[in-house]
Image 1 (cartoon, one colour):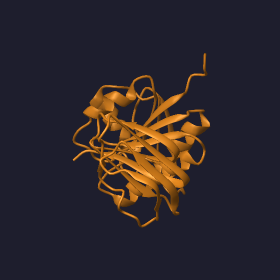
Image 2: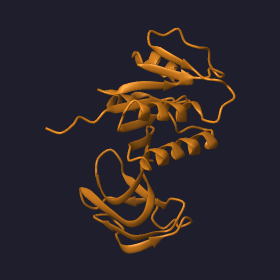
Image 3: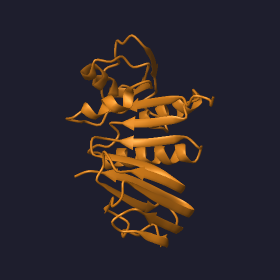
Image 4: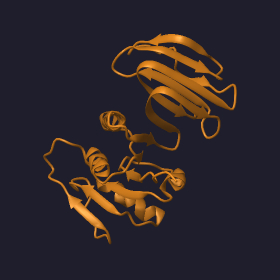
Amino acid sequence: MGTEIKKCAIISGAPEDDLSYYERYLSERYIICADSGYKKCGVLGITPDLIIGDFDSSPKPDADCEIIELQVRKDDTDTFHCVKTAIEKGFEDIVILGGIGSRLDHTYSNILSVVYCFERNIKCRLVNSNNNLTVISGETVIKKGDYQFFSLFALFEKCTGVTIKGAQYNLTSARLEPDSQFAQSNAFKDDEVVITVQNGKIILVLSND
């Protein structure tokens, strides 16, 4: 028997009208709330395991769980601090919920958190009701199901040997530059798509309209 993978969900505070998608990601996961993300737990009727934040945008909660209060002036965002704490606790599979919002700088910071995890061999996804973002290299298989479209973007550097099989638009040993956009809004042709990246790192976004 293999070693069980420790899983964690981080709930960030981006405003959201629909929290129904949370249910599929919270089962059997240790739950960390980033600052005002704890309010979503109240709506969902769940108790987090840990709350971390500086509480500059919301009052410090009176919750029946561990709370780590941060200084307002600090180098890391509340969500990034949660990510680092999750890694320190040994979690190998992290999903960030509520981290895609109206503040583009906050959203980009959360994308960088996904990159930070990838560089440390930690599986991490940034998810909201219509999008699922992760970083990939090597061979990745994605299955037709919850999402209609997928897009690939070279991360920081050119990527070579990019092959896509099973999609509406396949590629063979293509090169993606950091400003390339031709691999955006692809769709499934088969039940699963195989993506291979020989050199470099790619942002993979699964999405719906």
